[in-house]
Length: 423
Image (spheres, one colour):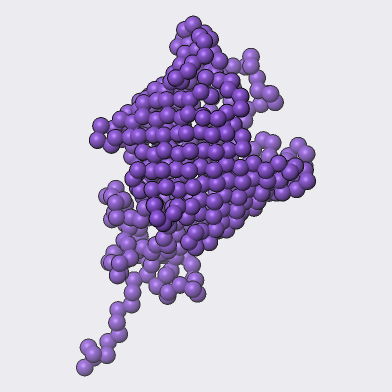
């Protein structure tokens, strides 16, 4: 008789897995049109950490990112910035980017058209990449520009080869100015955790008869890192770069994935924890040629950190030699999603504090609030397992642990997969 009155086995405990505020980053959509050297060595992650949601002081910035349901291959990004106080003036700046993408989940082949109130007024950009032969071509053509001063103002074209461990490419300007060398090049290679690369990028307007011999036209970098670009995987990267033989840049970036205990009255009883994303980065730039000191005579140093507590709140801070900033962002995952951010900027020299505001409406990147078994990520030794020993499926909810351990991200939601293996 007891078997008929036995209680049903309780569901296994779960840990909430919120999507990142901006993943994949918008810059990743155009990375095949940019030299790999300028995106590797943690540069893309550090740029997002130092710039995203830090709205310009005294300004109100609005951005709309929409994708029509009738044709998901196209989308529109429009940005408008205006002064939020009398000190910032009354000028209104804006731009609109219309983009066509061949494949929904492959951003490497695309065409976009930029219309802006500043130079260039109208610009066309295109990129094509063949994954079978790993060869791509890209080009940028300013159609309307008020004042064309540099060779790049007439357009840039390039070719590239990209695989999992090697990226090599070259770019040139179709209409070079007299005595200018009309191209640049890069080579980046990866072996295990080590990545090294070199870039030839002549200074604009250089008329040296043998520019290859000028060390100021070369950049080189080396980095050591571990982990993937998936937000579910902890990762770090340390890099050193010698820029134009005049500046040594050391940078460090770390992405942490931690779990904390939570009791949410709006969730089911089996939800015992939530995943947090913590990012930290620093950058130090020091001149190696003492004869050409910087304007302030000192090295440049900045550090930043961010903490995403859940799917709705993001807190960021940035500290530099001249200014420090704190940003708080709130995001509602409606369709389309809305994000409001406020930034406080403190000027160390003047002792003043100013504020910037941002509003974003987005319907580009799809994100879902996932649930997983509590062991889907490797916790730090000091963290307590919230619900150990749970390795079973619960309905159709994803179980991330074994997939991440094996390096298989195919069954994860799109917003939780790595950006891509191609350099």
